[in-house]
Image (cartoon, rainbow, N blue to C red; front, side, top):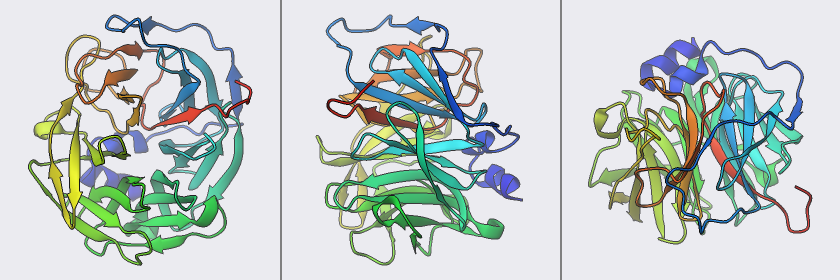
Length: 336
């Protein structure tokens, strides 16, 4: 079974992929009631922006939408079965993978679903947007019949995808494009070891990157940091412990060199239990702690980056298993 395979090869990512409820009819829950907001470490100079963060929660089959940076909950999008990894495109729309429904949904800034792509070749878990070519890449954790996964690239986010593989990789999880159109994605080998791969622009096969300068245990977020010209990769088991951190990397030829480490804390000052997929935004990391290992509640945070540590803002409410994160910038002249 796919669920059992998930538990074998990715300990905590898998927790959110089993025993989930279907969402029922789709739509938006407008004007939700006020929720707890903590800003103990907030800097008063941070201003409200037109950026919103979408947080997927496969435990409730919903996507929560917050303002940035203060994380005020403004909408809850429904109509999903198992919303997981996310990415945003040039229009400010957010794409959400749904592992159970085997679809990738496009949501406008308001949270309205405007289209759904079908994935008939496996279990979608992550995605990435190529701003150079306008293509959508989707990472399938597994293929059909529990076979190895793949990268699916939908040309201009439509139609049937082209499928790409790294022959040495079995599970495919999260990815990000650089400015040259090269796709980087992480996952696991058939033996359950962390892998980082690159699908170069115009290439027909992905290659393995050798990670040096540290060890990553469980795949997490993958994003290109254009301001530093490096790749940022998350680890859900930092130091092989129940804690999450992220690593900046310099990519040269077939080598990814870890150059630092950013540890993330919760409101209580402890390390976050599990940030599955975060996103870079305005010298910050935005993401959620799936707090299955401690007495606290799961919550969404804004941490300083690359400093990390104590969050600037947080919002803890009734999310049960927060998973993915993506930023939507309201189109100029568009409605909220």
